Length: 160
Length: 61
Image: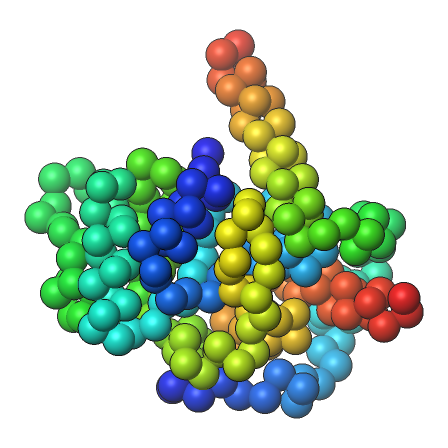
């Protein structure tokens, strides 16, 4: 099971600039669904990519679903050459995205995010309306139920 | 694409509206009474319970 508090602590304490999207962001906004991984959008500056690589290095990041033994190293060169990574670490599953379908990069999303306290840490979540937009833009049938719930949250918030 | 599109431009989607009828709004209302920290901790607690149930199921087979 993913150790969400520890994963976030590792990222925050290393100074990684990131925004939480996906299921954990949905939970933060009031969703009743559970999620098994942490999805983040990271800022693609050289400094931040170096911080991200250094933060995860002690936690054995490896491509999720890839056969064991592939020569994969999650270092700054790999991050520069790639963009989005679905990783397994010794702290659990972590999706590290440089760009999101419909939402763009960290810099495009940061104005549509909000800072909140979680496990005693200051972290950024994408805002609810943008989260809905991202899920719609992803166009995955499996998200339909989630999108419906997120839109219901918007409606419930308006009532209160 | 590096720019985020405008989320406020979303139209009503009839498929999503159909799914919305099955959303349990009582769960949402209870969650909205909690802080962000409490919501995430609650989800992790539920996830832990699901893991335990799965482990239990595996150990019997």
